[in-house]
Length: 500
Image (cartoon, rainbow, N blue to C red; front, top):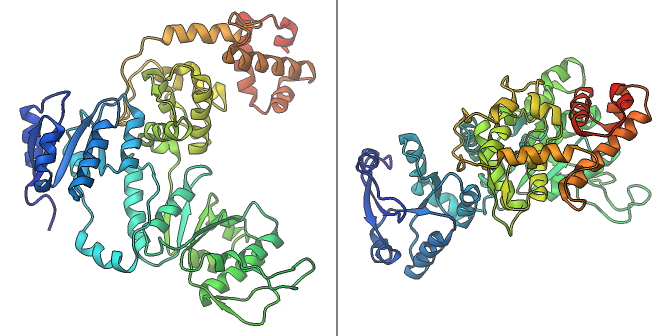
């Protein structure tokens, strides 16, 4: 029976804003009977009769911590839904890590959002699984965009079936994260998760790493070595970039998958393996089969179920929640906010490097931001020209520069308070592009820009063309033209050098 067929009793605590009548009626329509309270003491008195606790967080986790403590004292577990103001990005991730069942924006009242928040696992079906396989702790993952939520739900269903899975997607999009979701949502969650990047090792080493060897099997084999298949017994083996695996190893892998047995190098007996294999690739394996670079029989063996991780640009709803998670990870002792202009720039960028590139940008912003408020001047993209003029390699059509001055069209669930520092930040960027800079010599921004200016000058003076200079700097010719145009406005760089 659906959890929305009968009314569920919720204790509602919001000291910031009373629950209005229209919203109260909306919640009643989806089966939530709300009892409005004013203090934590009121919650303590009625906790035993509640199905839910809904609490509004302001700028800290204090109320959630208090409610969790009350539950421990009463020896009762009631799921908690936290409502968080959109400008407090980091609270959402921190609340989930502390044990909140769900986090919603404080002004979110749509029926689908609240139904998702009120969803509970089927306890009857979970009982038998829990008895045989106690649940393993789940990692904190971000699947907020509708495309990501659909992928997560599908992955969790696939995890319950003991089938091999093939994860497709571009580099840096989060294929290993999804592989871990498959592992942690399965009956093998208490077993090991072992991974191997098939493109990162020489052919002979991959063979030894996967299948192992006996003592004395070759010169230097002073003791036996259990390969990754044996190390992953009872768990999951993740083979990343499987499209790069040499052909003769593909044949050996196919045999192990079919027979569930392997023979170590130098051994006389077979070892039975109980391992679920999850493979990943950023290549089109169908084309690799046509090019005779990948075995067709292995392809059908590993792709019982295929999952595709979209590029970050195709799931914009994940961008700001990922930023929040990354800020918590890389700035554990500080609290950061992100201006509306900076959010628009993050949403407008094409993210050719996907989540890995986003993490780089966030780490740079943490280093450059001194006051805990990240603005556009703190965002250093891997390709500055593309960040400001639109990334035209499989990117959104709207330029990121235009997005800086418009409200984001994508509902990310996190939109900060209006910011008034854009003009000041633009002035700072202009000053820092000059050489020598008008800012203080010890300023971190100054050091970054000054060093960039010197590298560009050296590259131009030591090469014969802009193309060669760009290649030496590791950037595109367009990026170099953009940087030169910026330097022309306030630089003492020789005009001859700029004209080359």
